[in-house]
Length: 419
Length: 191
Image (tube, rainbow over the protein chains, first blue to last red):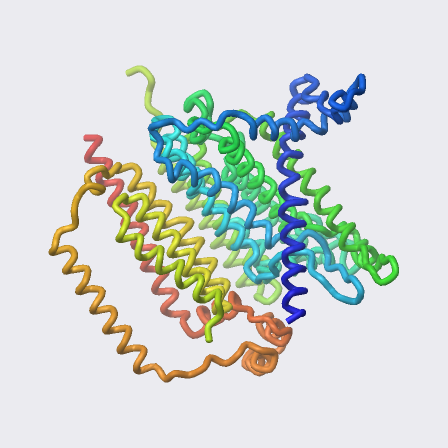
């Protein structure tokens, strides 16, 4: 009985720590980064005033630590604003929708491995909440539920522009889920594994998928198969990253909330904390997407260069601290990738809606499909004869040519503007 | 004795299923189907079949029901919410329910009431002997975990390989059919 209670305590501790002390703080932090970073890009200063409010305690001056407390002020502002519900909305779904966008993003955190296993007093503990064998699929499945929140928000607002925003978002998310799922098949073929913890462990031992330059603690060049596998891995990485952009409704793919066409998109009728929840859902999805990219392609918590076994060995007395260091490495990689997301948002202009659909269905879907065949051919090559490899390569080229040809002829000829 | 989680998810599934027909608003009905599917996925997890649970959510809840909801919203069915169900519809529905119940009772009475073997270390290690020693399935089984995704893949590509290929062909034919049919109707509109 005490065993079960201890187990439950450990699980609750992990959930509270990873969800409420790692993921949720990352949301306001990335909002802060977004504002400061876009200010840098636009040659402005950005929010740099809010710090420790000593004036409230009777001192003469506040301490502005680079404006790091700005997210707190934003949060308080959003909580205290008037929560106005228009009279014409469908109330139940109007209230349900913001929650439905945030909750899936928070659930998906449970399969992300944050660090290597730590051991306390001889008790080994994984640094992830649920060690299940279907990691990436779980993330896709649960985050695909977030589309209900956006769709219902658009529909229940009972107003024209939010509805168009909701419909756009549904079409966009369904379209990009396909290339999202297809693009990681080469990655899963390489690891032969769906468990994210094992995938990261494999990368720590044998080199990251995009940087396979060490083997069992020694730096060196990879073997032929791994080296060739960089090609499908890079293609998969590009398709996956762009699809994550589309899936999280980030610029350049934020058509559902395109201000110039749709006022504010699906959250036009929302105010106060309900609006903030949509905002939080978007940023939490971005954090989870970055976490998934880092985990699958960039080694997760591993430092790389054969240093991981040394870090795992570090300990203070009976307490191995390697796992804690790995959490720091993981969060650092995560923030670096979030900064990349922000950089793209403030440099690339927004796509047109038909361009977005065409990119998803005509370019990425086919490219991901061909990439699967290419990856399978490279993986199977050492066991095939040279004739079989040649036939496979020729077939692959033929399929690629055929797909490009079909994509070309399926495109309607541009209409003349003046007849 | 099934676990409490079984009862929890079974009740969620049933509540979802009943509210599909009890709700008047088509959007509410569609959302009830979603709740029911999530409960069903929970039941699959209770059977240690994570892959089936995830696919249940990914395919049915995340894709098919979203399309249903999409279409219901676009149609904007106002008359549906006011129409009283006719006696013929209720009778047809009831007869279907009775037919399925009889079938279920027939299947259950013919199934021997066996206790499922517990998934402990001994059973899993014994099962590992059916697979090559260096395969991923065998190593996962001897480590005491159930590699349900790999087992499903293994079964599909060995015992059921031919039906799988036929199914793939069938899906391809239907996909091409959809494209051809939708092209035809859009051409007619243009002329």
